[in-house]
Length: 198
Image (cartoon, rainbow, N blue to C red):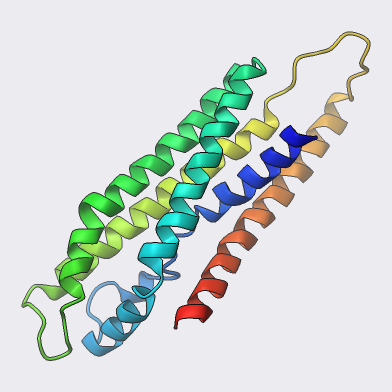
């Protein structure tokens, strides 16, 4: 029971790591009104760097480490490898944010509508691209982890296996529910933390 509960919680947090915390950023790429962008940026920067790092990165990483250990301990090697792949995707995303996005963000914090560098649009787009790439890595990591649900368990003697069609249907339903859970977790994170700090 503990392992199933822990797997569910890990799935939830891994799904939450799909969010970057910044919401939809596509409308902010390219030429935009500097005041609009800075209002959005300053509002999100009140909560994303702190809560984003803890909720979207550190907690999922800790749960993935423990879950991978549990899989390897139970001799579920393929599930363990997929979980490690999810962990690596999240770690690379964190590296991109810390190494590339945060230095640009620290520059942007000093910007005002009347005081922006001449290349502010390219800097803004580079920052948004790094944020987006981190989000894509979060999605890749989450999908790697969700695939573990489809890895068949070892056949146990004396236990009757489901027919292939029923087994596929069960896994498809499980994937759908997990997908809905993941997207719901992401939206809840964005809505809850954004409403607290904006």
